[in-house]
Length: 231
Image (cartoon, rainbow, N blue to C red; front, side, top):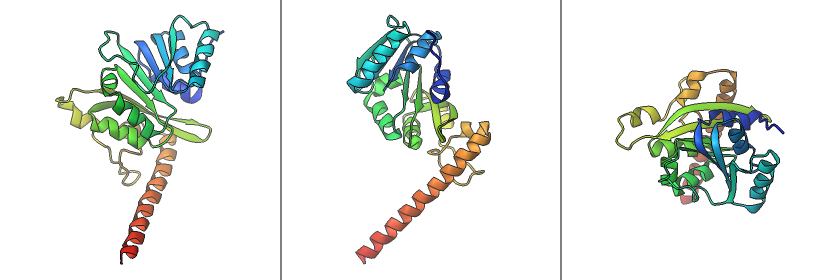
């Protein structure tokens, strides 16, 4: 039985570079890791989830596709199961979680994340939090991609750690400000996305600008209310 992916998952898989081990954190059904193994992107995959039910589902699905010998399914919290001192090159994928959760996972597993060949992130919301964590911790965001699924647009961020002393760090991971779509900090989209352009970016940027306006106006209104209460 041949495994095929489409939409958001296929776009994430396309961003995974060739590696020895793929760590799919929060693997859910396990299809992403199974696909990368079956296509030769990774020699093996470790599928993890913090809850037993998704881990069991991943276990069943990988074996249904005859990939049991090339995949391992475990129950684990974040990156705790990854040894940053291993000699094998590995890639980490964290997809399908909120941006705050993604950032917390990276922070808790700092060394494991820093030692990865690449980190592929696809936050379901608040990509700004995940992107800002990468920026603050000297990661090079070397690729960004938008993908639309079920009327929602998601950002896929590909990053790798730069040496703390690297002269490239400040120039290559600095926040981007877009003039074309108004004053939008990196939290909404980075310069790689802007350089790529396209209709999907226009749609995404318009929604981001509207959201940014709502947030700033909401914050202003809250400050005004607090000021009136103090008076």
